[in-house]
Amino acid sequence: MSTASIDNSLLCAASLIKHAKVRNSIVRREVVIEEGAEVEDCIVMDYSRIGRGARLRRAIVDRHNLIEAESTLGFDPERDRLDHSLSPGGIVVATDADKRGSSLGAAGVSDAATPSSLSSPSRGKTTDAGRHPARRRADALRIISTRRGR
Image 1 (cartoon, rainbow, N blue to C red):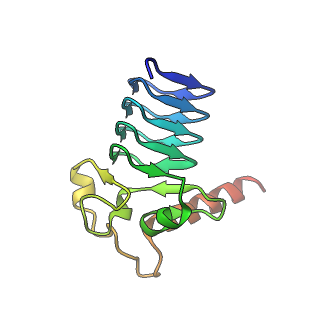
Image 2 (cartoon, one colour):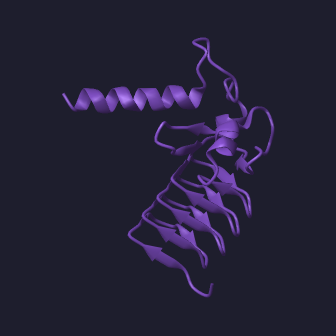
């Protein structure tokens, strides 16, 4: 691949696409997508990095995350379900809470070392209600959007 290919996507300020394919996606500010990466039908949040040759489809990558080189998200639901939240519609949500106490998840997702992510007491643990923090966020967003639709 000699050039970047960007189709029907929204790129925010200071994002860098290095000879990669981005299609039907939203790429937030200061995101780096390295050579050979393919991002399709995704939302990549602020300050994330998609490694060389990584392939993402129907995924949401939370802020300050690193998708390692040659890793995949959104192609194997069974594998994705082991390490990430997966919606009933098959959308993979990669957050720093998915890493269950390790610096790299099985799919190669890692967060940048930020003071807020290192000091979070709920990283990778279930809450007192027994729900994973990423699922609680998704439930909260669903409730907010339902209330706005009234």
